[in-house]
Length: 273
Image (cartoon, rainbow, N blue to C red):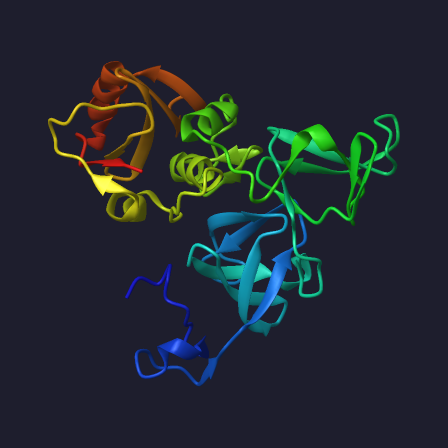
């Protein structure tokens, strides 16, 4: 079973896995919300980063032990989060940041001290609207930078382009830094399209498979071994990559040639969300 999506660590397992995996205890888990702008999800306590979760992300806490919580995220991914960065009593988010980044201010005044920097996709609970600002537990956020959770983007390419220039970060999922699969996941989720966290999962699960000779269109996903890009036109694509160390939009054929020359091979899958 894939350890990235198997909600078990030997000591505990999700209740629905009883009889499927061995564990000392089987638990239903308890809900909590990420309470910091960007939070690393680790492979093991104090281990390497697998992915990141953003403010307001809801998780299922299966174990809280020695300062680390073993959790399952909304997309099914499991891992370890710092327990002090979770809040089980936080209000349910109702808005999401739609700007590349924004700030939460001490007052409804852009000249007042800023309390936090929030990336695209961070979710907040707006308690009331105060003129041009939304009041939240973090502070006052410019209303123009927010959108109700139910108000989705229409086009994943629009969302992907909002991330142009974002620095590359292995396992990153925010406009402060992301990787290839993080960019695709951010773009699709903002449009209400289910999407797992890693490129190999995306190559099997997102949308429908396309034949090798099928004409490509804007929004189609192209996969190499360990890499994914999104088409923005017949011969253009956008991706986060370690060559540019950033999110870039470039010619499809030129990128394919460079990727092959770098030893990463040819395209292994094409999918249409």
